[in-house]
Image (cartoon, one colour):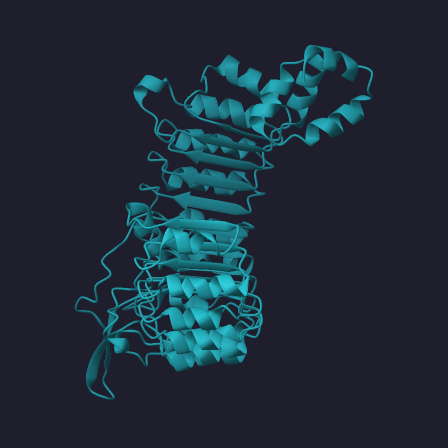
Length: 494
């Protein structure tokens, strides 16, 4: 918009100009717009509700006050110093955070990332933010439990708390307080090495209100080898309810990289979540079929399940033998098939399992097919599933709801499987990664079906770019093995 255009806006009602500005979503466009005229500068400033700042943020109190005056209705602020070095200037400190908290009267959502100069006294300033509902602390090395207690006591509207890589937070006094007096609906604790999953059970009555909970104990890929630990496959953690709390509002649960033995720990949640819709278990050691059965019997509304499994050692005193395999068997699949009629998204990933040893994975194709045929599965991801072959693809081809299929390191799937899946009635998105037994001939079967809307092929050595290009309009092809592909294989994601 030019200055000439801006002069024309003066003749328009301010309410109409405000509605026009609301339609502009890109920050760069809004910044440019505010330079055109004083009217647009004021309107844009009043409407800006969210801002993200970092290394370029001037920390002088006067500048911060001016910033708050420029955007008087900010409700969401993200301060991110990732990649910061001393040459970038000063970071926001305790005094600066006080200015923000005392001048942003509408602040609802605050994220502090890599803020090295903010400690407990600065965090305590947030007690002035009576409207603060969401707080995220990411790699804030000076924050301890003392600062969190200040937030828990002062921010009575807090409903979401996310702690990521906060290495000095250890005491759970803040957690006990929030459990007794708070109203948390979302709690995320990732890679906080001084908080273990038994501590989190002290949340007490707070579990009743919680709707989303995520706990990850270790950063990165931990040792996924079975080691020398042995677990009883028949041990029932839900046979004796030693934790007297309810979590019937919990809808979204993610547990990652924790060991549940020798004590029960957070595994007890799996038998208490009546309203659960989304479950993600990533490398949780010592779980067994009893945990999944207890979950399925309570969670008839379950819509999404992700199971990332590695090898573990199970010893049965009753049978007198030990086996090395993943946590769950077909008993878990049958329980899900029987009790979870709304299951739509299934993500199964197996780490460290050889394609030559089928017994290393507790699931069989028979149990998997029972799940597929019983539930309206719309999205399916299989990673290193050595039990899955062309017969499994044949079973999938008759699934009426399957829309998205991702196969990674599925060594037993061949061109025959492609011929089957090409006839799946609803399939529109297909991803193949490191599936080396699928060739150009299999891709030709997909082209003939004329059903796919998108096709992703990465590091499938027998598939050429020429064969992939004609399948559908949206094709992503890569023949290279890279670190990025490795991350996709291990951590998932497109």
